[in-house]
Structures are given as structure tokens and as C-alpha cells.
Length: 88
Image 1 (cartoon, one colour):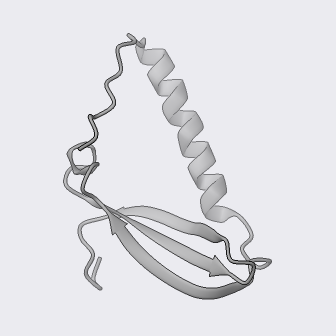
Image 2 (tube, one colour):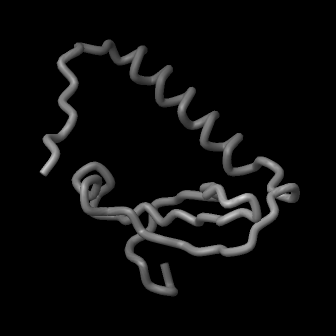
């Protein structure tokens, strides 16, 4: 079993805030990007949760993936949900 990543660097509040803002901007750009050029042949969703639940208030990160005609796998979207049920 892999050991959790432990940060030993002390960050100031303003640094954490800036990093959080930057990551949010990148996530929003990722979520709003144009997907019309992706040639999807297979689409599926999967929940990721084993190693991160302690950081997400026991939420699952639901990821949508595409397998493209050229064989590569591309993440289309990710979001925190309360579980992997249809309602989530």
C-alpha cells in the first residue's frame, strides 16, 4: 500500500488562497472546454474514492471518460458526488 503524500512545507494563508484560486480557474476552464472535436467510440463514468475520501468529506470523485477512435483515453469531466448511484 502506498504511503500518503505528506507536505512538510509551511505555506502562508495567502499562498494557499492563491493556489486554490488558480486550481479553481484551471478546473473551470477544463469543465468548459470544447469537446466537439473528440471522436468518442466508448464513454463511461467511474468513481474514484479509496485514497481520497478523507480529503473530500467521504464524497466520491465521479469521472467521465472517453475512449477515442485513435485509442487514447481522455477525461471529460470530474466532480464530487455523494456516491456512485444514479441519483448522485
